[in-house]
Length: 135
Image (cartoon, rainbow, N blue to C red; front, side, top):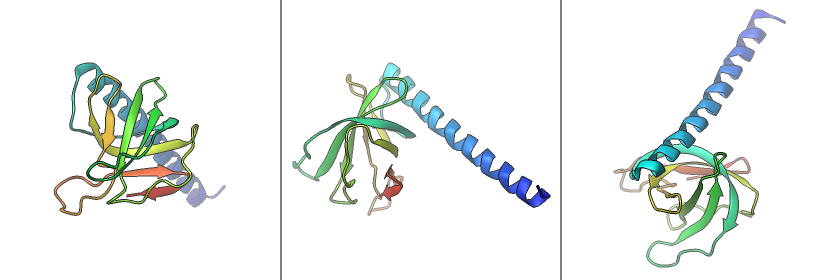
């Protein structure tokens, strides 16, 4: 194996490890925020769809579904489909990665701001599902 190939492998391995750490850290942040009733926290993690809910049609329209994190905590995801595309063919069991804002509630919390901010006043969020990023 050449030095260049070995170096490229090391860089890819480092990035993969960092990504796993970032997701684990996000899950820990969410668990801590839930325990301490903290809101307005920007987080990055992933979970598996345990329930697909009807869209919220009041005000801005939101695609809604419930994710279960690896630690067992559940989150409602409220994805604004007036500002970002709807996740296509979302099904129970699908993995969804997210970058958005956590809001506390007694059921585990809500993730929102999973889209760009047209006014540019909030950090842009996103969802990833089946290799496609929705923002």
